[in-house]
Length: 147
Image 1 (cartoon, rainbow, N blue to C red):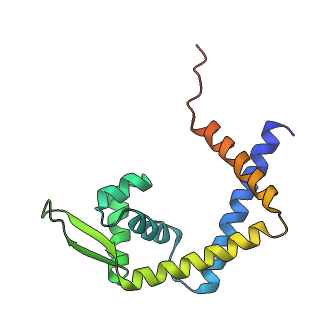
Image 2 (cartoon, rainbow, N blue to C red):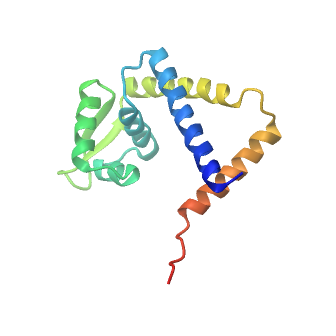
């Protein structure tokens, strides 16, 4: 298989996976977009955290994140409290409603993952994971300059 064909196959896989996740989210009627979901997951992984920490984790613009956080706060999914270290900063955590929403999101993703892996053996899944990690490593490793 040529390198271009491998790249095209990967591109199609990524988009098929994204479509499957969106369908699962839509079927569950979450009422959240992918950016909101990623923000909730970042808060779960970093909590308690600041908007700056989330912005760094997701490599997003702080203004974009501020709008997302405001929306999630309005929906009652996040809690804001003053940082004990710096009263100008806010600590962000998930509310009980936010934790329940993430449980629904996790269930959606588990269904999509099960569908993705349907008919694959444990050894095939392990081989896929190893190959995918090699591809990730190749892409994240700096390329030598053509000097």
